[in-house]
Image 1 (cartoon, one colour):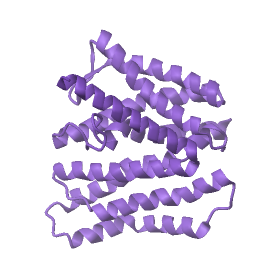
Image 2 (cartoon, one colour):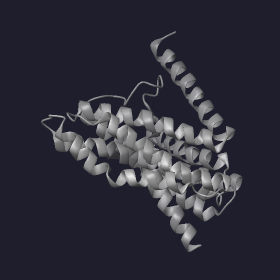
Image 3 (cartoon, helix red, strand yellow):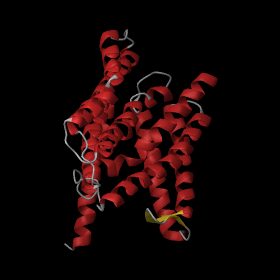
Length: 286
């Protein structure tokens, strides 16, 4: 078997395993879905801090990871209340929030004892790991519920992912067939404006399918799909920007043929805050 064929086989098998894990986590229960997001969060933060180290920073690994996990778990108390229709565990929720009141000064204080020559860069990298990786994944807890009026349905999350993937696939197909004008050549030389618009068309089509399968307003689904398509591309470019500065091809190697967690879920990290705000505004207005 040639190297190219072997790489395709590894990539295909790895992708199939990833899809199986995602499907299982989504369909077993909302809590396995939350566990999947937490796994992506922890691995993604570790990968981000490794990139930061390659870029000359010395992030506070333990403090950053604990902060991201506390943020996520605190939100899980809200998530569980919606899913199980139970009262909020106020003590645990408030305890998590209080931790974040002192998060920034704790980062500053910890750096006093690190004896590093780059304290500002270190603090910035530590906090960025929380807000770039953990925060958007925390919002992803609630986006499927917002698409179904508070009812847990695995399909709502899956179609969000399918929108992201449809955007990638259509952008690739259109880009390789008729891509002529570079989108952001400095960061990603292969991306084209033709592929960008082709990806949006694919995402909108998948959004319409999601509305039909899951239910809900076609306008909301199509609006979200358009937002996810545009911001998802930006998410891919943002991660490429970090990797280019670190001079690495992939953020990690946890998935053979696909790279790291950040490589697989970079679009989700930038798109979910925009999707969350859009859905929140739609809920308030309509």
